Figure 1 (tube, rainbow, N blue to C red):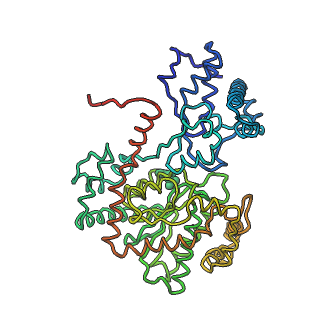
Figure 2: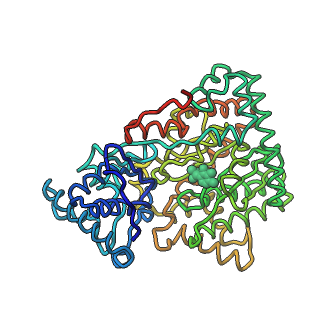
Figure 3: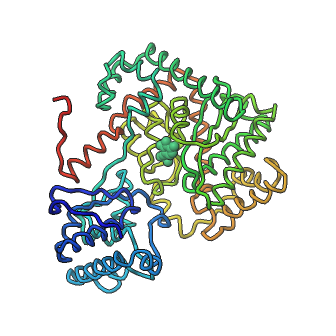
Length: 516
Ligand SMILES: *Cc1c(COP(=O)(O)O)cnc(C)c1O
């Protein structure tokens, strides 16, 4: 074990450690170990740690809440394991002293079922616990950390995430930055709320200038995608974008099925007045996540089929960009017209991509989930395209949800899903093998219930809302006024605001003026 020399006595009132998710939680028992090595008794060391640490939860996915096998933990870091044991005993005594029954204690134990539960450890030995959007912080109290909220309600609070406008506007979109700055000055670069000063100046002239900036960003992205991906995206198309990690809960699959629907409608001679649209995807899958890779393959095969079909490729193009990362995002996000944020309600903790798009003047096509809710609170439902079930509806539906009923009752759903097995998108053996796994995950289920994230339940609603957004671009002035109303109302979503809230409400520190 490494040894850190303490040069001065530990002062919990002068030291804060913010645990950014459960991953660094082992630092709690490690601090206690170090303090005890300096001669402090356990009780004082525990109290010092509790006053030092706070914990930010970043996900509602139960499989992402970290636990470690006791045998592994003990064999790698035995001296820390023994501290975890002491913390666990302290917890049990505290809970019993406050009247908890055995059942409740069993649900809250840090060491349980042969595993060390890191989120429980982080929640127990913390001053504050926060989620990263209003809905997420509420769901922590109601659901994931419900027992903990009952015993320690004063610890729980919310810190809605933010993004930095220096990178996601100043660096990535100099044209829009200049358009704004020339009218209201550049104060919004350090105080994003100032961007609201532009709102009363919105008129036809300003929107026309905004459209020119958007077109320039689309031209530039189109050139980059042509060079990097070998796919031609005409700059005159509507740019409908979904970029984020590849995960079933983010429902890239539902987006893909909606594109299959549009493809089939066009082939049947319908939707012929639809504005030409490019569907742009970017995502990485975790190395062992087979279904995520299956979905990437499906989207790439849709792209091959659509882009090479002369019946439809003047109306639709599809691209899945390689190696999506922050640098690529800087090129993609300013060029977007439509921002896809379509996770089922109660699954996306916050999202930050949604904020980057909003700031750059894209409308959100999204669900009542994560920070989408707060985005729409600020920018107005009428300037965005919100659809789908709220959390309570899905919670209620979950136990008796039967996706096969929807598949059998809806011709739209059936036709889109059947494209996975009828060879209409791709019929080589590799595609067949991959697509059938997706098909089964929707209708039969794998290790979970079928269609665990309600793709089929919401597909028709989603398609309708998506076509609303695409068709609304026909009135260019009206559509881009909505876009600009998103930009001017993005003030809340600066990470400067987020950090100020952590400073005031958790760390108890005050800003200093660096110019003095
Ligand atoms: C902002 C960002 C994300 C987060 O996107 P979400 O849509 O909020 O999941 C992921 N990856 C990259 C490269 C980003 O820039």
